[in-house]
Image 1 (cartoon, rainbow, N blue to C red):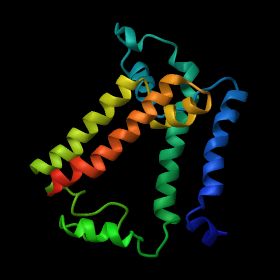
Image 2 (tube, one colour):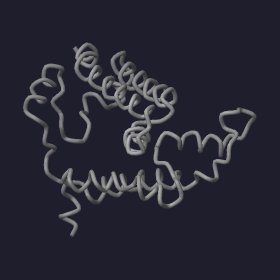
Image 3 (tube, rainbow, N blue to C red):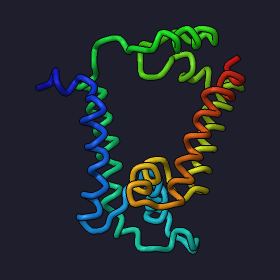
Length: 186
């Protein structure tokens, strides 16, 4: 059983399981799935004030905080006890492209040349991690939700704003990966 759990699940198993969360949540009480809303719930819970954005009944969405805590805990369990000991497989053409930027360490899920404290304190690191983090947070707030909320929940319930948001997320990802990242790393 443990060996089976350590292997990546194929798309035809993992995809439907993710997709089935939508009808299950709707059947269990018209609940909506999304991750970024939890930051709002946590702020409303921990910092009660006269800010209109945080004045709502966050207790009705308390289940979503448990969902995020479970996802975080599941990530810890998976990384500690279910990690695949095999080397990480990276497409050969991507390896060749990243080698041109000096990235060649694939010993963990993220390249060590990009994700370390020395890199964070460089100009490129600040642009990539701090600037990127700011843009993701701003985009989630501006779009009224994150990729999971819009692309999983919103699209499956046929919401027009979620289609627009998902197209924007994808266009931004393509722009970043194919235009901006080569400029930043180059």
